[in-house]
Image (cartoon, rainbow, N blue to C red; front, side):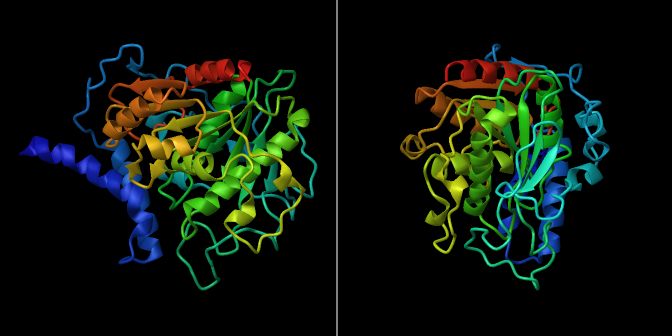
Length: 372
């Protein structure tokens, strides 16, 4: 009986993690707290998944030997610590990234690859949306006047960039765990020679569609300024953690390439940046999948519609959604889409850049980009 309960608990908490934002019976403060608690429980509660994956090319023990701590050239406000799961804290998971200075946007400010640059993705009076987020709607992670923004983190001085990676943190659409997910991974990719861009996309009460537009906007900005960032405009990848991976997938499935922003919001006024194709050449699904909250989509016909790029999966055997990750990886691979995978034996959900997977992903990504 105890064994059955042990298996059930992590499944329950992960269902909470992915669906907390859909609960209508609780107020918004409760939803946010439930989302945070679910993440923490999923990170610490063990399931019974050990050794289910017998592919020795993909399965590894995982360790923190090469986990990259905050690089010395990162500004102090981007200090995420060691990047190790063992040093996790709730405060770090809920910490917010610095916002842009004044009204600097991707349209009114020149791209600068010499230092960390933070820019709003949309002009203040022209943010595409179908959701009405008003002043009297409180209790959310973001305030009603939140504007999505991108943080551009350049490679080390003197390093020739290998390409660009756009990152989205997880958090069940209740919060963005930038200091535990995307920022430590940006730090590691920074050490491997990649320009990195963290997108603070829209959360609840907004939809996945609106968040996908934020991702597309960031990709368009990077492609437009590829020469500034020293990259080929086709050498751009998106990647996300948990809900952030689902957000990357929503972008690739429905809002990339030449899909215009006014497809969702007819009142939006297109600008010059909208003329740039939102093209990404690879995707990283880090304990995540293509689909909706809590459900990975295994329908090959549905997935084909997205004309998906090469995709790299990373997840642990103790993740309550392990079986869904396994299943979708097989579906994607059988569709003929180039894939990569690392499975960390005994690791839970929410390990960020820890576990020794980032270098393999960086090598895989560099190989993908050489084919463009």
